[in-house]
Length: 570
Image (cartoon, rainbow, N blue to C red; front, side, top):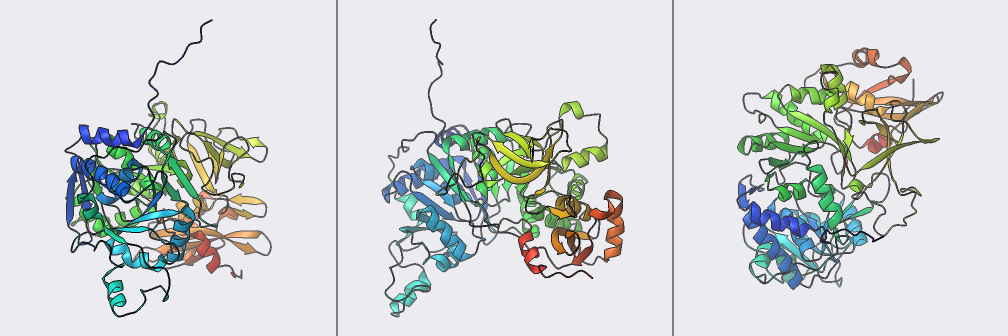
């Protein structure tokens, strides 16, 4: 019998094809960037296409080799988007550095990744100088928002040049230490780039970008994405039941472009020709609300703490701001309180909660309404369901692994959420693949404790490290936090486990009151009592000024555990 073969062309999946499609089909679509002085700079996709290819040609002219890492230390703006596509087009690997980390940590990550070049915003040069001695880049390419271009082969900055003229070593560098790398001006590089650029030859499995995990429980780990994984993730998350992107959208990525590639949305937006509005360094609620008035988005994305602050600011001055009608918001990175979803719904804004990790590219699941449930659930039931982590993407396999094996999808049995798929990491850069993060049969261990109901909706009960085990029974800190934040006087809350002489661990609630609100512990406990068994309620409530945050804006419970490590029960 004759063997049948596929008749499809073996054309590799490639980011370059997305850029070519965008440049040809959507030349008039816009990219709007807010500058440090809060003015707006506009480019078309035609500009994006031309400038991105010029960046790729310039990097090759500087000596970039296939597989070389090019780090970025940038806010969200058009030049950072050009790096998303231009660095891989030249054959390099874009590595976004998290500018909110401590300088020593940034330097360690850059060194671990083996970054060769750096693209940095001029306003972030002071931060760069703080870790410049930890890892020496061969070249530093400075993107200037305005003003005098950077001198081609000069020392680092005007300040460093002045020190050199005075015979002093540059700041942060001892006399006799290695000289600083040559500095290049981003716009000058693009202006003198050769016009005959051709994309670097590549396989679809070649790397295009890398991000490091936040490292809140140990050293950060590098995740390396490929052409194939990035294109599949873009196609998957853009589907109507998920992010639902189209060329008619105006997308405002508040999630930093250095945080899991802004959840992959810039790639998907360019693929479909959507307008992009970048907030630059201005992420305060008032700044975002002002930008929303000037450039009304149809889709925004960010972590819950951003939207908590934004809705509070908006409602505090309703005469000044109005949220764009029909705007939808993709929220992830931490559990979204049901109260926040309801609060935005009163303004006609639909929040869709998602779940993912740096290791999942990062969208693993997102909430949408299954048609078979419409009409069968009341309003309260729907809002409770909207606070779940949603439905896994079509290319994401999920399972719940309990102590005795896989758990049933009954909404009750909980275990570790494990995932696998074509845009899920199977190892870490430079790490032993047998680190314990991956199972023997090829699944990623997420560290999240979850259940899945019969309709396929994921309920994240907690992180394994955040569960509270009291007298042999598990208490979900996430469920307590969501209930506490439903109180009208509460701005934010985090629940942690503290040692207990009898029960081993008990929950301590750290609560931030809204400005001017009066709330006492007894009142809050009475508010919580109807929804929990008595043993699940916090034994103590601490009112604090603010919940510590990680570099990606999540609540940093490890810092709270350090603060209350010596807690003594009365």
